[in-house]
Image (cartoon, rainbow, N blue to C red):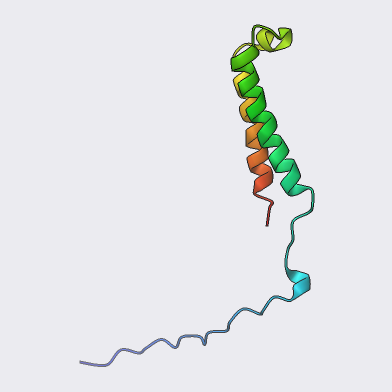
Length: 84
């Protein structure tokens, strides 16, 4: 039986090493903004459940308060993806 031709594989070339200038660093605003958005969302949901009868605009929104609170928390998680 004839021997099949083998394919020649390319030699492995490691990626170039990063220099200090090429490292990406998140801005100073990322962590405080993330924490603030998460806490605002949590506070909004807790405020809706605890004092919705006492505060007029909260009771007017009804179940939309949950969407608003989770919207703030979702925005905080999106900002967290920029944190390096």
